Amino acid sequence: MSRLVVVSNRVATPTETKGSAGGLAVAVFGALKDMGGVWFGWSGDVVSEAVANAGPNLEVDGAVTFATVGLPRRDYDQYYRGFSNAMLWPVFHYRNDLAVYERDEYAGYRRVNAWLAHKLIKLLEPDDIVWVHDYHLIPFAEALRQQGVGNRLGFFLHIPFPSPQILLNVPPHEELVKSLCCYDLLGFQTATDQTAFHDYIVRHVRGTVGPGGQVEAFGRTLRTGVYRIGVFPDEIAEQAERYESRQHVLELKESLEGRKLIMSVDRLDYSKGLVERFRAFEQLLEKAPEWRGNVTLVQIAPPTRSDVDTYQQIRQHLEYEAGRINGRYSGLDYTAIRYLNQRYDRLKLMSLFRESQVGFVTPLRDGMNLVAKEYVAAQNPDDPGVLVLSCFAGAADELTSALLVNPHDITGMSEALQRALSMPLAERKRRHQASMAVLRENNLGVWRDAFLADLRGVPPISEPAPQP
Ligand code: G6P
Image (cartoon, rainbow, N blue to C red; front, side, top):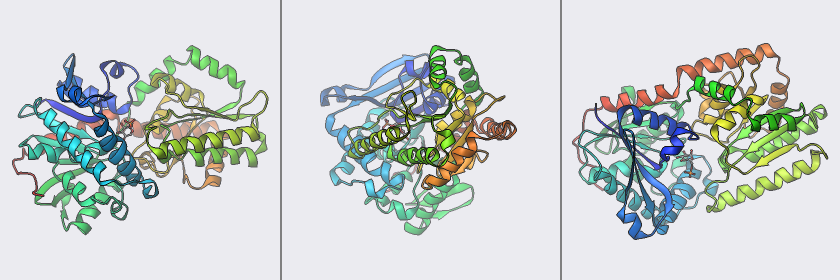
């Protein structure tokens, strides 16, 4: 069978794949381990031009080669901090108001994609299949094609694909879509994302969409599909149970003194709806005084992309809100919101989820949101907690047994919290069983295998890249 080459902006280290790695790393690494292959991308380090050009750095672990390159400061600024995270990320999450477009950053984004492609080519074998991940790497296939690569190339978008009217806010929108059309297979998290892409193709570039999600545009034919990323729910359940009696869980339980616990875990990102979430919790305490002193919200929010202005602003805003609400409702022996800007080991988190009565996951937009799935999987089936989930997370399509909320409706969210905290055991069990059935059916292996089977099914291509 052909070798798999995975390309993503960040590459997990061999150690991370064995312990604390997140869902994507677990899935990708699982496929690489089984099939043998290469995982290529940025090391996460900013380095001198000379060091960057000397790369990639190769580390072999079993059948997997981790191939990473560092980025020089200017490349990091333009490709990662600039166009990827100050332009594409906000617009694709429907926050045009936060987007900043700089032509030279876009030029840097394309330049780094071409440079990365050039680096990868030296490692590529003719029948490798190449699976590229996420918005940082939209032009990657085009760059490979321009350098003569005919391998099968697949792309999976982990974040939402915005509706065309939103996408038009990215000045080079057409170039980006044309670049996407250089892949052989495009995978989306939900049917909504796939439809948005199709709409753009039909309305803005007069392409066609045929049966099975086949797209013809810019002189190319490619496939599109919906592949919902998942988790391995039974492994999570087992891990959460195994960690149940560890020190960190016992300490948390003791500190709660019998109070109920609402848990939230997100990167500190404005797309996660954290301010609205804090206000919903505040409203619960305001309108239902019986909960004052009797329920705690633990929000774990490790900072991310902290050199992008909008991330500094959301951090300040949230610190203000947490302080304000705690000033109002905490007591000498009680903290209403425990707000932690720290990264926690994933296995630890699963056991904390199991201790909590409510998982509060309310992004304003999210491609999928694996925390929602992990929360459900980590529950004790005999006494499960309740998931309160934003209808704008991709996971809401599948987890219809959660309490679905609109994250802009503060009152609606505070009512859902009330309902979740008081839900009878029989209803909690019923909802949990229904959600677990969905998680098992669409597990992470299904996501990976379905995408790779479809990519293998694409006929090898020989057409050149569309001309500029
Ligand atoms: C999101 C993106 C991923 C990214 C992750 C962490 O989940 O979809 O592509 O790797 O955030 O972001 P960071 O900027 O820290 O790599």
